[in-house]
Length: 215
Image (cartoon, rainbow, N blue to C red; front, side, top):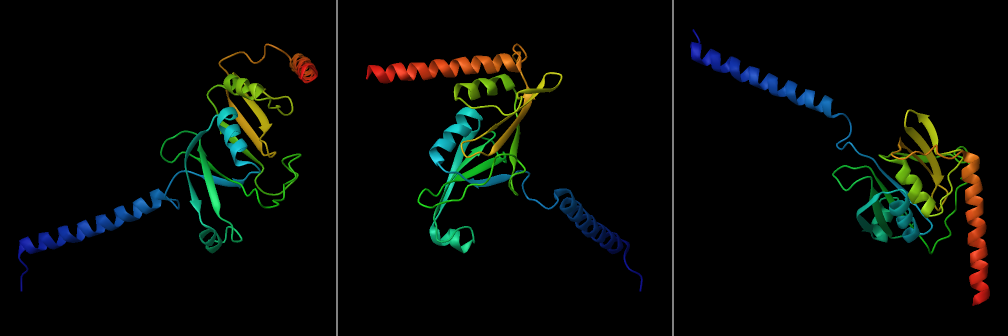
């Protein structure tokens, strides 16, 4: 029995469409990779949530976004805590979809052990955070205003107009910032800056002593 030409064409077209759909689906799966979102969120415990929030917004320059809470029973069910509720505050590089973020929480009623943060190799685990900024001069100004101490000989020039700066947050976690500077950070040598900082510290100490005597 001869199959009508129209049915043959329909059958071939249907088979081709099914094959193309299957191949497209597999290609999309391969292109998408393992992860459903191209972002990363890091959670860590801080000693003082309010102070940490101020540090990461005012000094580091991050943006606080909507956080969340988890009741004790839920956090315990997920294996995260031992019957402790969680309040998480989130800080992103920018308030946009899929921006990498830090999830901070604290447990003030618990005696939480602190890691040895003298150097990045002092303790196993998360050692430091690296962020890329648009203006290192702005970073330095904010850090200096908050009295944050830069580590080593940073800000250090990487090449061209790019700099690397390293300091620690209130709990000793290392923060590495990389980026260009819109202002000249090489105006003074490291020894000049150290001398100025020493003099400023001495003046502050003298002023505090004077204010105390006046009271």
